[in-house]
Structures are given as C-alpha cells and as structure tokens.
Image (cartoon, rainbow, N blue to C red):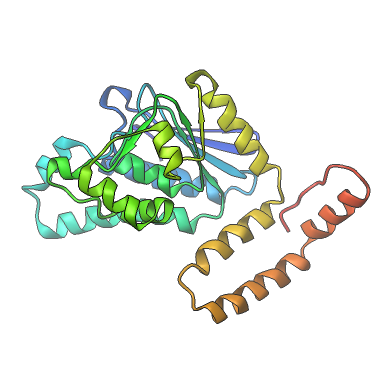
Length: 261
C-alpha cells in the first residue's frame, strides 16, 4: 500500500506510524483508518519489530473524526454507513489482536477518536502540550467505537464523566486518570518514547507476545477457565528457547540474545 495520510518507518526493532495530515490536525478518516490498519498489521507481522509507536505530525496527535466526513454521512445509505463503521471498528480491535506492544507518543491534542487511539495503546507517553477528551457530545455524537478502550483505561465513573461533560483534560489530568502513563516536556517526547520502546523491545519477544495474549484472552473468561488457559501459556513459556536463554544469561551475568522461540 502507498500511504497518503500516514508515514511508516522502521528503525532497528521499532516501527513508527505517524498520522500525517498536520494541516487538518490528523483526523481519523476512512482513508487514514485503512492505512493505520495496514501499517499496524504490517509491523505486527514483521518478526524483527518488537514495538510500534503511534504519533501525529505537527501540533496535534489526532483531532478524531472529521466534520466534513460526518456531514457526508448524513447523505449515505445504511449499508455504506455499516461497512464504514466496520472499518473503524477493525482499527480499534487491533489493540487486542496484535501481539506487538503499541506505544502512543501524544504530541498534542488527542480528542474523540484520538483519545480512543491513546487508550487502545498498551503504553502512552504525553507531551505537556497534549490534551485529551471525549468531545463527541458537543457535536451530537456518541463515542461508540472507542468507549470500550477508554472505559478499560480510566474506569466506569471517569468514562461517564468524560463522556457526559465533554471535558478536555490536560496531560497531567490524563495521567491522573490513567489515560497516559508519563508526561514529559515537548522537547523530550521523542527521546522518552524511544527509550520506552527500546525497553520493551529489549525483552524476550515471545514473552511479550504471551503477556499480551494472556492479558486480553483472559479478560472476559470465567475465572477457572482463565487459570486453565494461563497454565497452557505457562507451559509454552517454560519450554521456550527464550526462557532457557534468559535463565542462562542471568546466571552467567551477561545480556541475553533473544530468538523469539
């Protein structure tokens, strides 16, 4: 795919996906959604990539949906709206489907769907200039697709407050609400995000993938079934080359060489 609304680059073992329509504040459109899905899946399929950074070009992370698109939706047929909605849903499903950690580098405002993207990522670093919020009600909309991720990040009560007040949170307020994990100066955002990505990428890729699998697959499971499932994953881990290498490296006081097997 030739990308027109995003930038995709690989540096060592980290992929970086940048929403690249700064003059429009990096909206989530049908085109950018398709390109994000393709880029994230491409990175996840690459065994050399061990972390994926999501960010925005210019002063905004993502302002969410585009008003012109919403106006067009008023004239579209139900089937068109249905399939367009499925595409958007597929993007946000990726948070629980890909097994390469997603790290949000929130360089500026991340509103509506932008907040959903941040909440979807397993880790999030924000600039002090970042702002987040569920602003959909200001337009007569409802944050349908992103609600599950925001609810998991901040809890039921905070999600309800954010949704019904359409309040915009500062980076520090977003950190207090658990929407982001770290807040840094704008000039430090890129380097701090890179350090975090390298930290995650430095662990056994198999162990990281099993961690994400264990976390998401057991979320909706019955308690006893979750123990059975995790016991199976534990067996895979204990029989892996990476665990043997990690134990040997620890005892020999050297850095491990991971193979992801």
